[in-house]
Length: 431
Image (cartoon, rainbow, N blue to C red; front, top):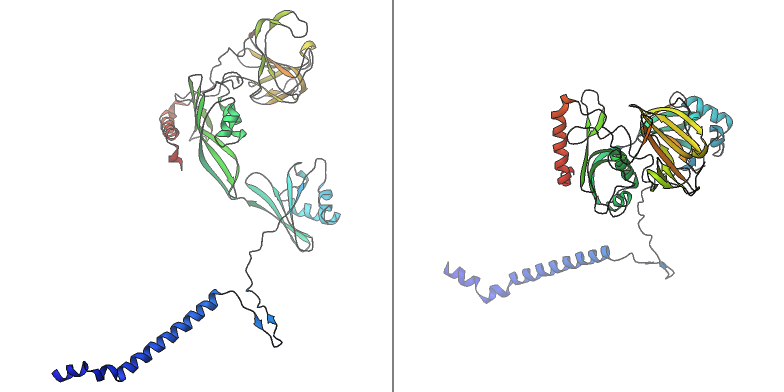
């Protein structure tokens, strides 16, 4: 063993065949590393030119890149008023016979003669310019699809991918509600819906003050992932001149009917709306003695004047029956409506009347358009209310709520209110 150890440590062993084997191994490892390095450089370097026999470089073709085909873009045909289906389709290469065949084969699903002016037809064409598919929106959630198969047209109703999600917004009034809602990142339509919901308690033309505030939970609709309008307002708290107004939506489990109530179960809807035109400024108030702008004498003015452009919609402030509609001297074009509990409303100086005597109208229904007819110095609406035959101040009257929450659902409603109040305090729980 001692001799073996001495042998292993001897100079002959170190300089003998083992050293040669180690040198050979290092040489092989170095060669392999050089090969791999060269391969890596080839992979990383851009494509090189190849030299042809004539000495000129030949550029190597790059690898083709895959590009996903873009979806076909339709031709959009906005339906003009008074047109016919055949006239619409003729602009896209349809013969009269093809238009008739399309109408006949699609009619069991949808009558194409009932297309609505202003809506769109989306026509998808092949490379030769021939229409292969036609889409037409039936409503926000469904559309009609017509596929051409040979000489036939096969109709079907397709559903959009539609989602409704809860959302939250809050704001402080600096001038008008619309601007506050806009600063909260939402659209004018939401401001109008808020005004409609609270119109029985707050006159948004006259009562808003700087510093008033709101918090609201509502629904947002999305069609194919894109915003498609607002759904219901679920809960709202509104501070106006130090007064707190609230409204919570409740759906009756037995009937499916829905309404908004305050925290105590009283309906937010009252017998009358506060104003016949949302957001219109008041230009003259109810007065027992006012200087008449035309005759320059003092006399009573038993209405409230709202300034608005000609053509602005005027809405009935309560359900009722039209008792007069037409010209009435200094009142110009005028509408008079009889309501429950001996109330009547009058609407003066209209440019257009949309109802007839004997018509039953609903609260919020458009009954006419603002004008400047009769004794008028400019476009406005003179709005008046009578009770028992005597004029009353529309701005000073507080009307009673309509039917309150049904008592058997008080407990369920309280649970809803508690939930919404917690969400208004901590809206992050919605998401």
